[in-house]
Image (cartoon, rainbow, N blue to C red; front, side, top):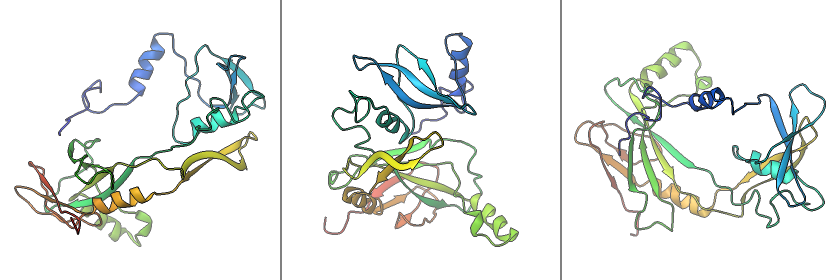
Length: 267
């Protein structure tokens, strides 16, 4: 697949949510409260959320922010942590947690990367998204023993860790290599596990609330998927490059790549 540029972007180059956020604010019906921490969700006698307990940065007191509708959304551990903190007599284990599932069945994207190297300087990084993608291995015959994989051809460079360099010359050598490299990404399917969850930690934050604690153990299914990802080889009509880590051999150019798969031993 080749998605081209991001068509949601107002100028057809890249998208930022600030664009539509500013449009929403301009209607006069949307207000953004910055520098505010949400501490609790308050529910009424029917168990419906009626307000939030918030603390503004620099303030020494809490406030209630009433709302007809409350949407709990965020990144990773914040939403379940807020629900688990929102306890009362009717909800001793937190809001919406009568089943005990809040914070459970946590699932992340698993993403392995390797490096494609070229003779020519391609100057990667000029385009944000991975516009070249292959779904050839999303549903392979052995799926179930391991996860499916979407292959991403990035325009991103392979970035070295500058703290591992000893002098300016080594840093400049890294930049020179970056001009001739691109990342290859393997976007891997994972599975639910009892050992992937969010709970409350014993440590307290600056407001006296327990931090959210994230526990995430890689499962045997994830390890099998990683082993499957190491079976790829890629060939193209022209050009040759080499990779590190995930692939045995990579041959790839920007023109009509063909991806093949080496069967695991025993199949």
